[in-house]
Length: 575
Ligand code: FES
Ligand code: MG
Image (cartoon, rainbow, N blue to C red; front, side, top):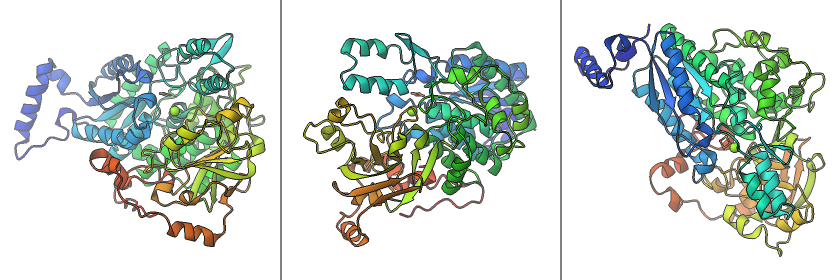
C-alpha cells in the first residue's frame, strides 16, 4: 500500500505533528488535500543549460506528470545533478558516482512511492540505475532519446562518430577551415543524445533490455511526438507501480536480466563504456558481471545492429526498423525471454509485439549478421592481469594480431605535447601506449583511449594503429584500441612498467595483451617505481573521496563502499 506524503516521516515521537508540518509547507505550493492524499510518483528533472542532450527534459517531465495524474496519482518533480559529456571537467565519468549518490539520496530523502528517472547523456542513465538499484523503490527509466541525423553535402552525419572522422580529415588537410565550421553546425541538429551506437544509445538499449523502461524507449528520436507519448505512458505505469509496490528493481535486475543485457551489448555493437556501467549496476545488486562470461557471450552472439561506429546507420533507422523489441525477437532463444519488465509482462511479450518492417536493413537476421561474433572481447596478459577490453567490431582486422614497438606517453599532457611533433620517433607499425589515464590516474578515467594518429602519419594516409591505455574511449570512436587495462598504471598496474622501445603483442584471437619483456627485468622496473602518495588534486572534497575509494574498471569504477545489496559485503579494493 502506498504511503504518499507519510512516507519516511521523521516523527521524533509525534508522527501526527510531522505530517501536519509537512502538509503545511507543501500547501504553500497550492496543493489540495485531495492531491496530497494520493500515492506519489517522484520524477527526476535533469534539465541543465549545460546539457543540450537533455534539452527536451522539460517536455518529458510535463508528459510524465500528465501520465501520473491520468492514472490518479500525484507527481512530484525534483532536481538532481545533470552531466553532459562535453561540459564536465575533468571528465563526466569523474561525476557519475556523484550523480548516483545524489539521485539515490534524494529518492530516499523525499516521500515517494515510485520514481521516474529521466536521463540519457552517457553517464546519466548508469548513475540513475545504480541509484535505483540501491534504493529499490519501483522505478521506470525514461531516456531522453537520440538526436535526429544531420546532413552535409548529401551525406548523413552523426554525433559524434562523424565529428571524429571529419576532424581527422581536417587535421590531415582534406577539409578546410570554412567547411569544418559549416559541418560544426550540422553534426548535432537537435536535442537528444548522440545518435550513433555510442554510450548513450548503448545504455538506453541496455536499459530497455534489462526491462527498466517501456518498449521502444531506447530508440524514438528525442524530438518526436512518440517520445512524449512514451513519457506519458511511463508516468501512468509508474502510478500503477506506486500503488502496487512493484515490480521493484530487485525483481527486474536478476541474473537473467544481466545476462540478457550482456547479450544485447554484444549484439548492438555497443560502447565499451557499457561494460563498465553494467558492471557497476550489477554490483549494486546481488548479481555480478563476470568478464570471462562476457567474453564467452561475445564469441557466441553475433552483431545484428548495423549502426555507426561499427556499421552504417543511426538510431532513427534502428527505431524505424523495429527498435529493441525487434532485436529481442531476432535474438530469440539466446535470451532468457522470461525476464520481467516494468511494463508488467516479460521480454517475451515485448519481442512478440515487435513490428515487422519489410525491407529494413538496420536490424539483421541471425542468419545474416553484420559480424558472426559479438562486438567486444576481454583480453588478459602480463599487461592486463585483471583484464582489458577491445571493441574488435570497430577495429582494423589486420591489426587484431599485431606485435609492435611501444611508443609511451606518460599522461594525457605528455601525449598532447608530443603526438604531433614532426620529430616524434614513430611508425605505423608501432603501438601507442598511454598511461595514467585510469579511474585514479587522470582522474575519472577520461575518454583518452582514442589516441590521435600522429599528424605526420595521418598526413601519410595512416588511418589506424594499435593503441593501448588504461583509459576509456567514446562509444562513438573507431580503431584498434585496447582499453580499461586493469589494474591501471597509477595504482601500480604493469602498464606503469612499459618503456618506449619495448615490444608489445596484441593477440585478439588468443585474448592476450603482453609486454614482451622478461619477468626479471619487469621485477627490477617495478622495484624502481616511486612510492605512491595522494596527489595534490585529491587533497580534499569529492576528489579525495574518488581517489581513495574508486574501484578499477573490471569492477565498474563505483566507490568501494557503494557496492553490494542487502547483506552483501562491499568490495575491498586490492591491487
Ligand atoms: Fe550527450 Fe553524446 S554528448 S550523448
Ligand atoms: Mg560518449
